[in-house]
Amino acid sequence: MTDFSGLFTPFQLGKFTLPNRIVFPPMGLEVCEGGVPSEEAAQYYARRAQGGASLVITEGVYIDHHSSGDNPMLGRFHGEDAFEGWRTVATKVHEAGGICVPELWHVGLIYRGPDLMTGVEVAFRPELGQVSPSGYIEPGKQVCDGMTQAQIDEVIAAYARGASKAVELGFDGIELHGGHGYIIDQFFWKALNHRTDRYGGSARECGQFAAEVITACREHLEPGMPVILRISNWKMIDFAARIADTPEELEELLAPAVEAGVDLFDCSQRRFWEPAFDDGSDLNLAGWVKKVTGVPSCTIGSVGLDADFFVNLAEGKIAELNTVRLDDLMRRFDRGDFDLVAVGRAMIAEPDWPQFVRDGDLHQLKPFSPSLMADPLMAHVKD
Image 1 (cartoon, rainbow, N blue to C red):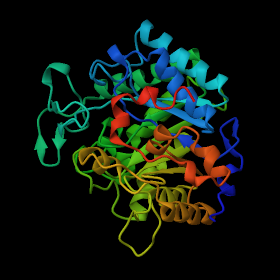
Image 2 (tube, rainbow, N blue to C red):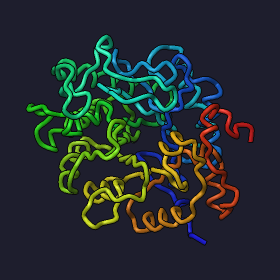
Image 3 (cartoon, rainbow, N blue to C red):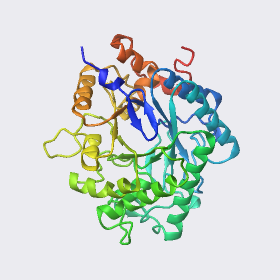
Image 4 (cartoon, rainbow, N blue to C red):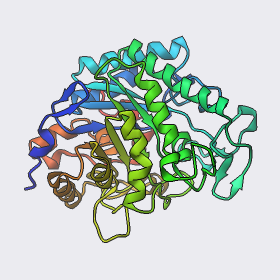
């Protein structure tokens, strides 16, 4: 029997002492009609806190900028109707015993094929005034001019407004979505960032935009409120992409964020067990990030399951429990590779995942079926 006790030790995140190391991560479920989370959405988040997740991170919420994103089924962080919905989310999670932060999000200039949820093609939308560091919608394809300093300042100010509103609504800090090919990640990724000013050219300069966002947000948070930065290698347009080719480049890229005072790196992978570099080390992204920055990290990516998210949905494949992967997770955790573990689909399928794992009742864990995405808010909400 694998020893999971390490996951149930306290962890200090900013001014908060988390009772365990399990995080419920942001999952874009497209259930916020008109961008407003419903009472059912608040109960959905609270149920995961009740089940044992010590930190609950909301789905990505569009910040108050004209081109932050326009999917009407994803949450927005502007408008009084949306604010009241998110206030309820924070309140319900607190009542269930969890710490709650919103994931502030700006998509930047994005292109991808048909959306997995809706089948709708997503492409360049000039009418939205989309912005990006250099105007590249994918590597080698420039479709507009890069951002001016004024445009950069506008986006940073929108993030800062989001941080201020998070405090007002009763959240405990913020996460910044800096992965998956969205705007912060577009600055990180040299394939899209061709700037020659202080925001591009070297790895450190590619990390400058993220640092300025962190600094601006920090000014609006109360002392001790954590700033979490989600990062990833993979992008919606390129699963094999990397933001750094070597550990040394990764260290240089993230140094400005470290200096700006980021509290935690949320390191998104499709499969947590895959190494970040082809250097003979088995360290994953969270492992390398913690090693080169000294900042705590959180790992995520098919935790406890035998199929990654995209294969799971695209092929309609049920993702079953994989105990071998859980053994590997604990080997890495006990080695000190990362500090927190985010459990997404497995906690949609089974909100009490932390409790069953703590008690060694792995036979109680349910597989994740793509059918749950049809109505994820109701998955075991009555338990």
